[in-house]
Length: 90
Image (cartoon, rainbow, N blue to C red; front, side, top):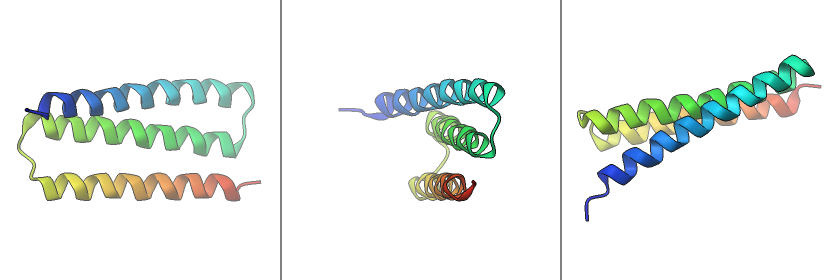
């Protein structure tokens, strides 16, 4: 069974869901501006960017698996840093 179509669809869904959450968090920042909400919005943007970048690389088929895993790990570390910063903001 070929999972490449399912993989592309999954990463595209992650990207769309991340963009929707980013849009909703921007609305929340406009209603109640706070640095913490801004960092959460940035975290959702990182998730959306990860989905977009990985889906494009999977769709084009030109990237080796180790590069995809490395980029995914970088996005995950960036997300953890942003969310950790959100917990430190008062």
